[in-house]
Length: 127
Image 1 (cartoon, helix red, strand yellow):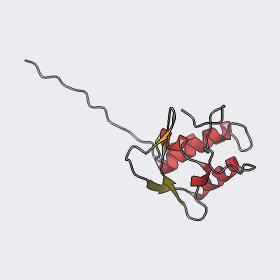
Image 2: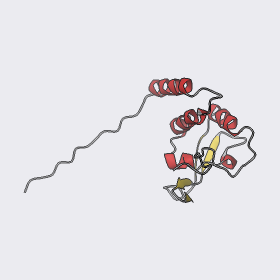
Image 3: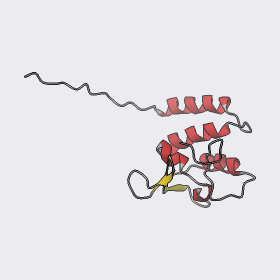
Image 4: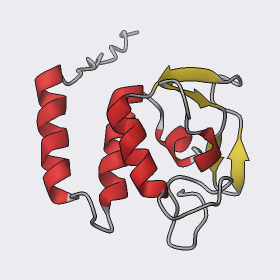
């Protein structure tokens, strides 16, 4: 009986210059003030925090740090609402000053603290 060999795929990561180049491209494509600036902020959040997509979709305005530079990840968005994170417990991720400023700009003019930071066209969490 022959052995089945599974091909092992290697995981590669962008280095700092590749990530910076991508963010520069996204910053040009979705400039400050554009209606799609949120797309840039999603990329920034993913690269700077390591959060999973569903965790990013689950961030609410009330979750954004006021004082420190740490974001508490407490939920993930799922098809019909929210659930615990994959690890079933909250954790803290870095929240840089640039990410803090970009998030503040997205929230300007809104006083709805319980809404998702990133929403679908219908106003609910992105799925």
